[in-house]
Amino acid sequence: MLEQIYSIDKMIIFFIYKNLHNQILDTIMILFTILGNNSIIWIIIAILLMLNKKTRKIGFITILALIISAILSEVILKNIIQRPRPSTDFPTVKLLINRLTSYSLPSGHTTTSFAAAFVLSKYLKKYLLIFWTIATMIGLSRIYLFMHYPSDVLAGIVLGIICGKVACIIYDRTANENNILKKDE
Image (cartoon, rainbow, N blue to C red):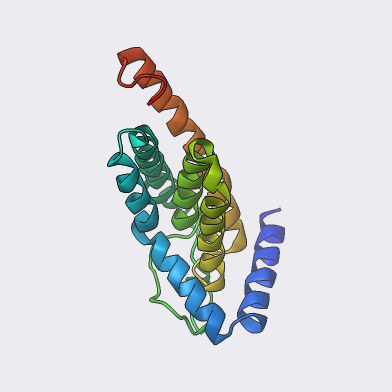
């Protein structure tokens, strides 16, 4: 089963590498990966939300989701699974960004992006298409740039959504138990 997944992963990533690369997409994908570096886009959004009393709760939950997802993906799961990155497995592939030495599964960029997108979409429904599009583009950029296999990104999507949901539950329970914020804040 794992060999079949790896075979499909290789087929997809090499199809993208050989057939879809061009100057415009190269620039767009590098930009989206940069937005996902250290969750910078999501942290900026969370900080902006925390500056406003009406949206402060959403900002806090987003930060909580980012912390949970980063710990699970970057600290725990990558070090347990220890899957090499595509750029490690295929060192002759010309990369558009610096080669990374950390492990591949799950994609941390994708995990944190989908955790944040879940939280933000839950509370700011008017902008959900924007949040999900940014998260999706960050995940796709990781495959396009040969940093992750498609299954790494898929795992990141699932894990991120779970982390976002867990962050909402933790925050709501903690806030209700400690009366931190009123229901309408």
